[in-house]
Length: 278
Image (tube, rainbow, N blue to C red; front, top):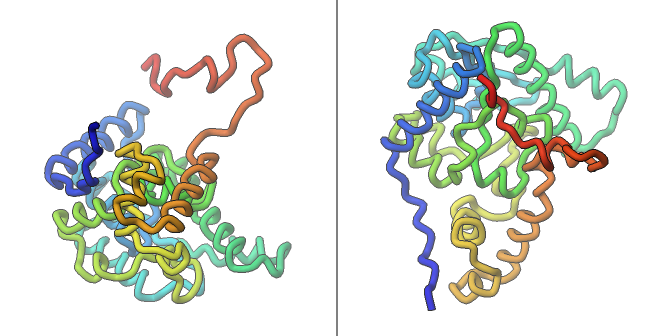
């Protein structure tokens, strides 16, 4: 009987960078755009995207946007400014507080989760507006771990025209960040969406990225069932929870489901890529 090997999440960072730089350059230019715009949070993922975009397009064609809310961490803004200085790009800064305050005026007690969703969507309003003004494409910064777990906001941080990190687990993004010389202060700090003071991704999820990446790699890449993963020493409750998230969050990974009433429905029968006649 063939047994699936343990997941090896080690990547060749140099080769990976070549692939991702080529991806960004070709996908942006084939649409007629010449620029990339994205949110620069001061976190690991957006720092890596900034490096990749500059390597692919050059600093003059890259527009990072800092999008703080009034309660955002000053340290995160400082880390974002480190990336701007390191790469020699011209960044913009847009305070999203007035946009979010408009939401709060109609919804005075939304709770932390809904407020966080409003902040994520406010940031995307700004990015898509800048995209339209600059003739740029919005580049996503969500990694494979977040996409599989549904750890993100629909029409917020999960929105983008293209995403260079979507097939890299968080563990692999860390490897890429080290090779790209992302500042150590960014690489070492706990991951956070910075949606409220002292927010931590791993505390909110209830597990570490290192652990969940291993289980996700067994479930997704290794195609193993829960029982087989438990036999390898993983806690059943943890494995069950990860699989439930993987299945339940499928709706975040696909376009809206369209009811089929014709002979050729979008998404069911009409599946051409966006550049099918360019």
